[in-house]
Image 1 (cartoon, helix red, strand yellow):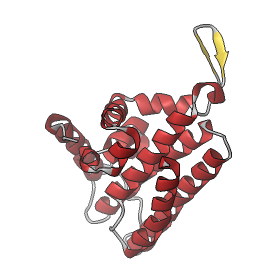
Image 2 (tube, helix red, strand yellow):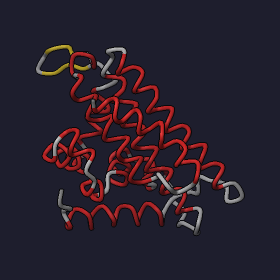
Image 3 (cartoon, one colour):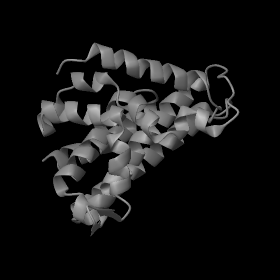
Image 4 (cartoon, helix red, strand yellow):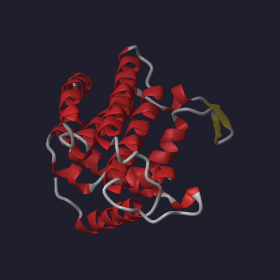
Length: 206
C-alpha cells in the first residue's frame, strides 16, 4: 500500500503536539519498568478480546481492541514525554491523551499502510478505510456502539446486534498491527510479548 503523504503530515503534527503538551505519565526514575507494565496491560486487552472472539462474542472485543489502540498511543507518547519537559496544561481536555479521537490518530500512523500482513488479512481497501475512519472519528463511534445500547431510526439496538464477527476480526487485527508498528522493539520486553501478539493475530486472521 502507498502512504498518503498529506495525511501522514497531519498525523505527525498531532503526535508532536501530544508529546509537547501534557503531564508526564511515567515516573522518570522508573520509565522502562512502567512502560513495560503498560505493555503487559495492552497484551491483556488483546488476550481478553481474543478469548471472547473465540467464544463467539464479538462486540466486547471491539471495545477492548480500540481501548488497546488508545493505550498504545498513550504509552508511546508517555515514553517520549519522559525524555523531555512537556508544557503543562491547565485543563485535562488540553492533553490529547484524554481525547479518544486524538489517540486513534496518534496510534494509527500512515506507516501501517507499508506493512503486508494486515492488507493480506483484510484487504488494502479495508485498511485504507479503517485508517480514514480513525482520523474522521469513526472509531470513537464504533467504540460507543460496541458497548452501549442505543436507538437507531427509532429502533432499539444492542451492541451484539450492531457488531458482527467480520468487524470484530478487523479491529482485533488492526489493534495488534498497531502494537507491532508503534511499540514492538522499544524494549526487550515488548519483543517477548510480541510472540503472543503474533499468535493471536494469525489465529484470528485464519
